[in-house]
Image 1: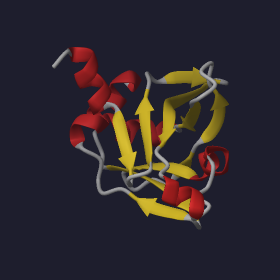
Image 2 (image 1 turned 120 degrees about the horizontal axis):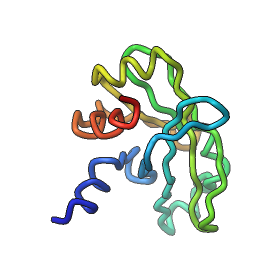
Image 3 (image 1 turned 120 degrees about the vertical axis):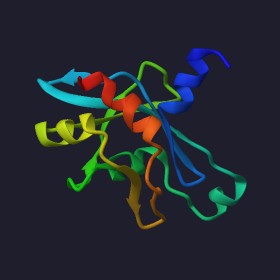
Length: 134
């Protein structure tokens, strides 16, 4: 397995069977450290019948949680790729410190048609994401 594919796998989080986030490198956005990811939604024909929410309705409902800190909801960020959306999670100093100490991490969606929380995110993913803040 090539290192770029392996790195992609480590930096990806699935939230249920419908949503995944592929995290890019950490960034400073408006003087705030942030994690930036690309959101992908997998919709089936059954989802169309059940009126599964559109990506734009879900973006500000997606969250991450590091350690015992409060949930951090993502902000929308338009990608250059018209098919995909970027999401930005702005992190404060305490969250970054917990991230560096490799605290547990969760992700989820808080939407009435797709309300879901992951199990604890793999330690390899947390370490990979935290590297950008050292």
